[in-house]
Length: 94
Length: 491
Image 1: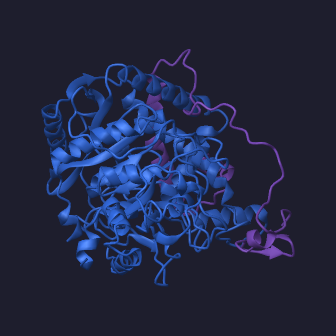
Image 2 (image 1 turned 120 degrees about the vertical axis):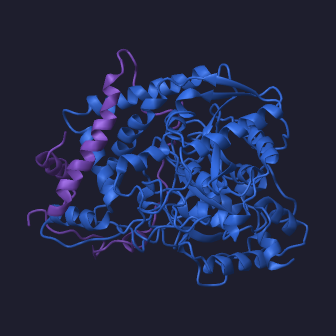
Image 3 (image 1 turned 180 degrees about the vertical axis):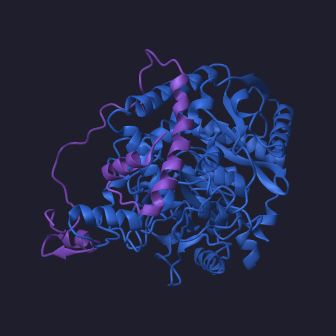
């Protein structure tokens, strides 16, 4: 149901590198799961609205007021790489 | 009190003993810490090296969260210092919170999850962090980057998952109680497989702030305990609106400790779709015997139908991975956790995620990304959300005739380590009886109801949204009648 090329396409969308040996098993396992879940295609769901969320929520917004946030050094302390006051990342152009 | 004696107390009994001055909070904490350090089941991902993880809380000044709480035990804080084991995925300030993943190896959060904060304020200090399936994705605890957890009843078998460390620790008596999370059964199924009590509360009852997210429309924190009373006691200190979680709600009434001994006037609905075909014979026998007991206690048993339940697993395994693929986009090697260097920004992202995530997490990210991708969105995600509507309607119809729906919690007893690791569908089928309630957002509790092949069988009771109090009462009445003996797990 899902082939090698599709696996690589989806992996690219998910920003997930797959090693060569991971591709075939992934295609096989995803196909097995997708074949199973595709059975929901047999149901007549015309005029059935989707449920995105079960809790009935209204007026849950808080006031948009400035409040204290975590100190910069606390946030940066867990980063793999920092430069001065920010997170350090490799160049997108590289 | 002797060391073994105090470790045999339920959490509620220990809190009472502390309040009465018969037991010291420090003494209890030290005894559990010593037991936790002798753990041979791989239940824990972190145990404090100091003698205490936090100052003695029995004498802490009660804050807002504890002063006006129900179920207060006189003297000190309501929970008096009964230690709490917490699933790895809850953020705990300065304490490793890795969600069972290599990508979060050594992560020290700068804040604590609301629910952990509330329980600590009520007098439950952090005993240890517990092992789990990576990002709560799994039904056996074999997907942890920190190794599998063994079932205390039989060390060759799984404890269930994803809250496997929490369930095994409580069953083995290494912790008086534990906090877990349930997205499609991750509290109830391990509770069943380990012979303890586990509750998934109504969606929105407990704040998700500080929980490392899996599937946000389904995730709920809940108690794993030795008995139903402890579950009610813990929940009473967990619930309530939290400004930091916009999907949290005020619980409409106080949670009270259960007292019911009978089930007179209670109607239990048995859905044919979840209590027959596909359920192991021994599990079905224990389930049927429990229904007979329920009748002796005065309950009415009715055969009911949840016509869309057979499609719940499919809908769940589209919706949960879809939400997960989005939630897990945050693990990119920039702000926290693992980074694996590679040329370019995208190279660094993809390499970090390749090395940091385990096979099941990769599978779910792929599944979710596929289901949300252009051309497949309506066929998978759109349809799954419509199935979810039908499942909500199915339960609504049943609850017009019945107080609760009862099913076996898991179709099988604990399976052998490795038995399902190469077959995702077989693993996913462990959740067949628990995902419908998750999709509907309704509360469900699992209690041990007997043994099959010497291993525990769980009974699941589910009720309408916010019916936790009556659910606890019914579960308590059954628990008293069943008199389940959990001794083998603590041997």
